[in-house]
Image 1 (spheres, rainbow, N blue to C red):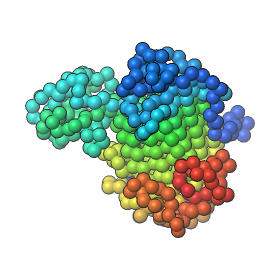
Image 2: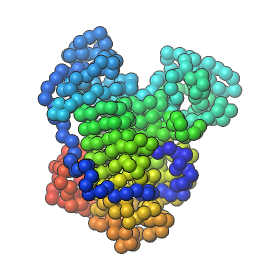
Image 3: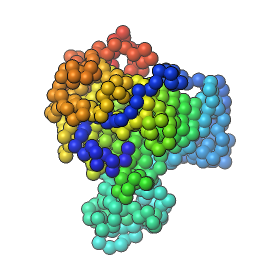
Image 4: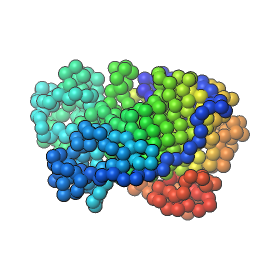
Length: 498
């Protein structure tokens, strides 16, 4: 979703938002409920990648003969059944272009060894491989041109972020940067030589860290994705993808080509166009420019169905935690599940520098597709304080509540925000959950209250004793464990962690 359209239409709206003119999917539609995809692998080679000791001329078939980069697996067809393992504790330079498996024989991307999850980055280090040329007046230009836009700059790891400007004349504070699309040159404002001011300067390229366009029957697990200017995972025309136990941070901010001169974007995971039979579970998302999780489409007719977002922990995303829209009206959206996720403080993080300052937990808008069942159940939606410059609400907005709105199942969620109207439809606001439920028939089994996280400051989103989220949710048939893999009882607590 481009920032430009949000500025025009939704500049004053935030929270849980739905805006659409769409249709209910007809009963004779060929789209059927299939359940979450299951990983199956019937055999194939295992390849190892180790940037420190590997060599791309090796066979890759043993840790002692590992590849050094993604090049051997990006440039050759990877057959079904292949496993590709990245060494833990190492940093890998993206993008990764995965292959496709087949029914009954997935390709698997994962980790081996001990230590931290392998880190795949979409950024270039600008303390070597070139030089900073002093242009005077605090302006420094990197000597090596880039082939793509730079979405963000991270200093000293992620201790500080840059501020993207749209002309060199706007540069005036440390960290301001301008990318000249004509020349490919990056100019940074720094009151001192950047090499003496910073130990690390990471320039996030505007390309997906993992571009899964056209991929099917692939499992991704135990990976860390950071410092990319577009999406973490992104691409269209996908089927049977599983993304689990991965961490996403500091993603997005790149220029969105074709959407105006100053529109930026970047999501954690985006399924574009045709997208079916996907499972996204037990991942963490933080510091994303736009939205953590989304399936979306426009222009071409598409089918998006059987997509499951489950047991994820999401915090500090600049726009939203979850976003869905699909058009034109000949498209179809069916069986989308956002269940047992923890959504914490959208509108914060570095993405708060966005010009439109809209902040949602759930954003479902500009949707025209025929629709059958979007389930939002068992989640925690929590806001500790209202973001500066935003009138924060949990707000439902729908131009046709007797149509597409009827296909949204919204129940057994725990909500908390410190102020503002709670919910609304067609700009009619409801001050609390009970009023909203009585007027709309939505929100059954839900509660409004402080979730009592054990320690959200350290990322511990388990629920302390006495939390109203405890045992709030009648269990969902296909969810058998929580974020940590803990088995569930007959009833479950709201959120990702039991």
